[in-house]
Every structure is written in structure tokens, then in C-alpha cells.
Length: 344
Image (tube, rainbow, N blue to C red; front, side, top):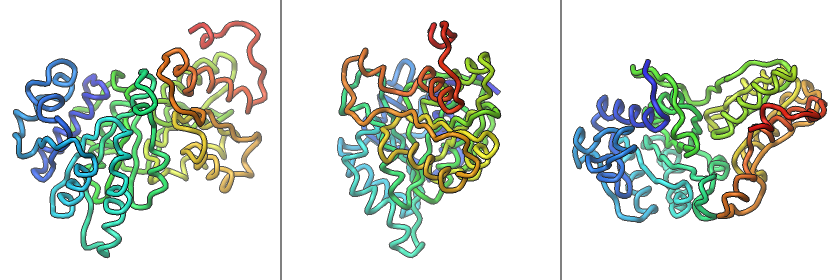
């Protein structure tokens, strides 16, 4: 075990995959120098390593600034035997390649009757919370959940980022991984040896008996903070991270709610037709008899993201909002005096 940052764990997973299989390549805009090359000084170089020096330009490929072209090229490369990892930078850049994602990447294995596989991973970062404005602050994984044929992962810890990415590279289906930039600097002990976390298996970060909080991506550490603070108020909160949104670990979510009888879903994406809505519908359909209170969602409102740091910060799920939702479903009044969360 060694302490790794979130970005360092991703770099370790990519390095392991490239060392183990010469078919694995990395492509994207400016990846040779700024991200994976020897001129990428600073945090990127320290965390991700000198990939260009280790693997050469044949396997670290710069692309033109054309997301549709990048995704199309990756799909073709995957269908002809390579296993590309595509660095698409901002998650909002995926929109420019929607035709390739929806009509080629997601459908081609079906359209070819299983004769062609699509072993490609698309990495993108969600830069919300950094005053990057409406065009660069999206968390678009919910819309891709609606596209059959795509797998979607949202790792929330360094160890999960490494294990899920290794499993994604091994998959013969296309995998989209959405990384919250708010998590990039987080650190924890990570196994230096190779390991994989199967896609579709949730992780319980904290066991509890009063309420289940299903938290997604950047909401996971906020949910853990809320659960720890609420324990001092006598509330036992279970924190569950799906880790994979497609396939979703439906059994783990239903089983947790069956034990606690209450559900709060914390999701940094927008409210309407989001991952939180899908999880809520799942529980309403399959565990309604276990519920002792209405389901509550803590999400970002359906609004464009403003540039103003003071305004933007208030939009996303945080520990205080999650704690308030837990008190609501448990029918516990808000504390009259300052708590550990309100003092932050």
C-alpha cells in the first residue's frame, strides 16, 4: 500500500494497463506534452508519470481539436483490435461528439451482431465548483445513462479510481468515466499491486441503521462528513456509493433501504431526469414496502452554472444540505445550537 492522490491512482492504472497490454493506447488533445509527456512539469508529471518517455509517440497520440473526430477514431481503433483510453478533458466536450457516442460507440457492437467489440474508455473531468462558467461546469453523466450500450463509472476515491479504471480498460464494451475535479487532490492508501473493481458493484463507506444515503461522485465525501456529524446527534447513517451508474448495483441499494427504511440521494448533477431520479424510482418500485418516509433528493437545481464563486458554491450538495435531508426523513428537528457542520 502507498498513499496516492486521485490523479496519481488514475495514472497508475493507465501505466499498469499499458505495461500489461501493448494494444492499450492513450489519445487526446495535446496529451504528448501537457499531460503525459516529459514536458508536463508540475502536478501532472508527478502524478501521471512520463508516459511519452515510457511508451513512445506510437502509443501516446496527439489529436486535432475535434471531439467528433477523436471519438470516431477511437471507435474505429477499438473495433480493429486496439484498446484506446481517450482523454477528453472537460466533460462538456463530450457534447460535440454526441453522434459518434450515440450512433457508433454505443450501437456498433449490436449493429454488427456481436462480431465487433468496442473496448474503449473515455475519460472526462467535471470542473464544477471552480468558476469555470456555464460552458465548462456540467455533470453530464445522466444523459449518457439513457444511451443503451454505454457503461458509466463515477469513482469517488483514489482506490476506486484505480480499480475501476483497470476494469474499464479490460471491458469489451465502451466505458465513460466521469471524474469530479473536486476529488483530484484527495489522497488515501492504495494497493500498488494490480487489482480490479468489477463494474456494477457498490461500496458501503459507512454502515448505519436509520437512513441510507446514496451518494454519487463528489457528493460522497460530503455524505461521509454529514454522517459523521449526525452520529453525534444520535442518527445512524449508512453511506453507499454506487461507483458504477451503468450497470447499477440495484441489489445493494434495495438491500440497504430494506435495512434502514429511509433514503436520501445526493447527486451533484441536475435534478430532473438525473441519476438521483433513477435511484429514487428503483427504490419506489422495488422497496416501497420498506420505506418509512418519503425519498429525498439532494441535487443541483435545474439552472445554468454561474461564474460567480459565491453564487455557484451554494448550488451543489454539501454536508449541511445532506444532513438537513437526513433529519427531514428521520423526522428530527434541526438543532437549535451550532453544530460541527454549521461551524465549518
